[in-house]
Each structure stands twice: as C-alpha cells, then as structure tokens.
Image (cartoon, rainbow, N blue to C red; front, side, top):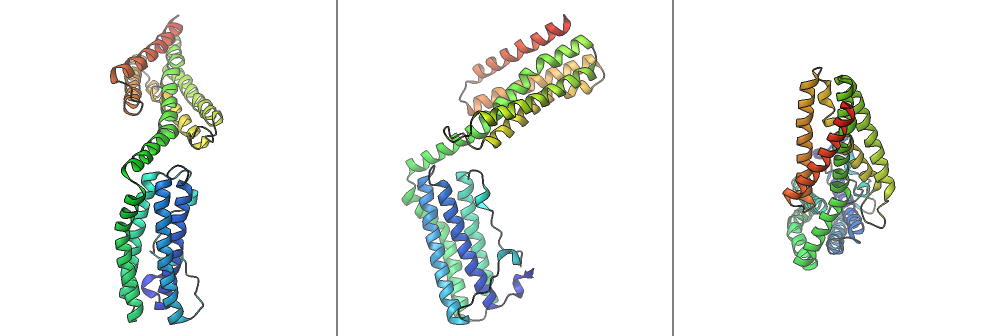
Amino acid sequence: MRDFSQLSEREILALAIGNEEEDGRIYLDIAERLRDDYPGTAKVFSEMAAEENEHRRELLELYREKFGEHIPLIRRQDVRGFINRPSVWQFPKPNIDDVRKLAESMEQETQRFYRNAAERTSDVSIRKLLGDLAEAEAAHEHRADVLSEQNLPTDVRSQEDQHAKRQFMLQYVQPGLAGLMDGSVSTLAPIFAAAFSTHNTFSAFIVGAAAAVGAGISMGFAEALSDDGSLTGRGTPYVRGAVTGVMTALGGLGHTLPFLIPNLHIALVVAIIVVIIELAVISWVRWKYMDASPIRATLQVALGGALVFATGVAIGAG
C-alpha cells in the first residue's frame, strides 16, 4: 500500500474517477434495495447517483486532456488511510436512518478527499476541478436536503419512518420479547421444582441451564422456520431466529446463575430478585414498544410468572 502523499497528479485523478464511480454505484444499490419499501428515499438516492456520474464525467474529460486514454486501476484499498465504504449489498435489510446517515458521511469524506487532493497538485486546471468538486460535495449535503424536500414531503417521510419502525418491531423487538418471555417464565417451574425437591443448588443450576439452552435452541428454530418473511414482511428468518433463541437462553440463564451460590436460601432470594427484574424488563418493553399500558403490562406478566413459579414450587415441595 502507498500513502496518499506519494501519489502523482495522474494517480490522484485516477483514484478520484474510481471513487466517483463506486459512490454512484453504492447510491444505486441503496436505491434498488429501498425501492419497494421506501420509494421516496430511493428516488433521492437515484438522483444523487446521477450527480456522482456527472462528477465522474468531468474528471474523465480532464484526465483524457492531461494524460490520454488509459486510466490505471487504482483502488481505494491500495491507498493507505483512504476512504473506506461499507458493502451495502451485504446488508440484510438497509435501515432507513442508517442509509441517510451513510450518505451524509460519504459526502463529507469525499469532500475532505478533494480538498486534500487539490492541495497536492500544482496543475492549475486539476487544482481548480478538484476544488470545484470539493465545493460540489459540500453542497451535496444541501442538495440531498433539497432532493428530500422534493421527493419526501412530510407525509411521505412520516410514512417511511413508520414503516421503518414497524420493520424494527417485527424483526427484532417482537422476536426478542417472545424469547425473553419464554425464557424468563417457562424455565421457572423446572428450576424451582429442582431446587425445592433436591435442596441442592448445583442440581437446580444444571436443570436451569439445560432448560434455558434447550429452550433457546427450540425457540430459535421455531421462529426461523415459522415464517420466511416473504409474505408477512417480518424480515430475515435467520435474524429473527437468532434474536429469539439468544433472548430465550438469556431469560432462562438470568435466574439460573444464582444457583451457583452454595447456600440454598441465599440462592433462592437472589433468584427471585432476578426474576422480578426480568419481569419488570418485559413489562417495560411491552409498554415501550407494544403500546400496552404500564399497569396492564405489569399485571399480565406478573400473573403469568407467578403461576409458573407457584407450579414449580408446588411440584418441587410435593
């Protein structure tokens, strides 16, 4: 790899041409990924890609005038410390706010590149074009706002934001909440039944760990296989399955770990406190994201947890 300071004027222009071409393709990739769900934002990115293509054309004309037809292949990764772009095509489902922030950061980084490049050249015409492009990139942020105003009126932007919130709910919050509830509530009975029947904290820990991990695997597969997301729009099944499985296991392990304490009475007290915290977190998530009233959410979760806990104690004590 070479430092940017070691590049010649010809190499700087070649790098700039490649940079504009790649940025334009990134914007087109984003537009294509957003077209179905966010058509207004997709149009904004398509128009920004067209402007990047115009910058590339100006750079090509100047390069041809100064250095001829052949453009050396100089890639971003060949220059130490140069701009690094994310692989948009690898995103499972672009987040609307993330891609808007990405566009802003891309313009800022490119503007900085052109200013540094302009300082590195002594050729007046090259210096002028690079300076003009730096100003164009600085204005691009404003241009993006103008394009957004044209293509994203308040009602459209609000609809897209609501859709993004719904997607987040369907792919992360609901699967995670289902897993946390299952792990926190369903594992109560076997753990406390083992604790009260054996009076051995390590035995209760083994039962709890097995129940939590087993439930996590079962819930993860059940969520992933129940819906591929193509009809319901609930997102990638593997992501939902992973979220559900991990949260189920964590919900069960939370009140299992206290049984590593040798003293049974202390372990039970700590475990019960952890259970109360878990149920409070579940109630808060339901209130925060599911529009459930705080009292109703708390009572529903507490009732379910109390019934399962009582079942475990009754079976273990009997």
